[in-house]
Image (cartoon, rainbow, N blue to C red; front, side):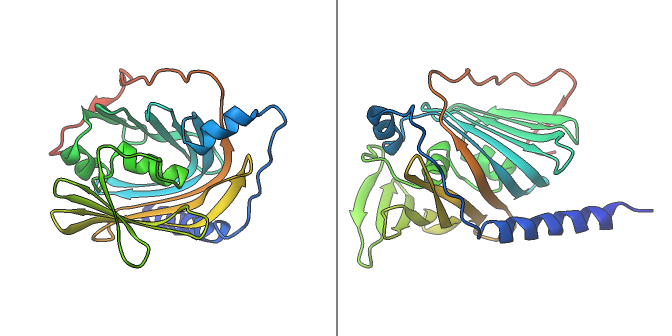
Length: 253
């Protein structure tokens, strides 16, 4: 008997859970141990963050859904882990620095290690979304300064960021948090992102739900966060060495 139908059913049931649970409120608390300076660092996105929740991740090489653990450092190093629902087995992991991307697929027992560039991101993530752009969305805000981008206010309240032939259009909600983001490469839409719901953590707004979709709708990230932690001190350096029991994939595989 084929397992394809049950697996598809589980995938769509989990997608439905993501959509409906994203609508509930999730108030955060303000621990007494957090100082005013730490709050200010959080407000300026200078901290280290651990997020947990659920994810549906669809890309050109497959799709994964399950429990989410996401770490992002003040140096913009990112580690995204996906675990099976209920069982909790690690099935997929994305590790990214400014220079390299390591993708570990524990279900298929393979890995990808490549330069972190536009071609790699489009091939393996389904869209050209950089670490910087992903961090903006995860934190729900733009830094005070973006020296690599030219800024221009547009009519209607949008903000236009320009870098060569790349454009990013952002719209903000009444509280000044990112509501939508559209990225264009040479005038063509690359991806669209939407943050419909925010939650309070340390009395600061953080995204509760993030949807990112490529221009075709074939690749998608849907993340719902249920918990946010801000560990003090320095995060452990990102390990970009693949496990020895996984085989390496090339871009044409």
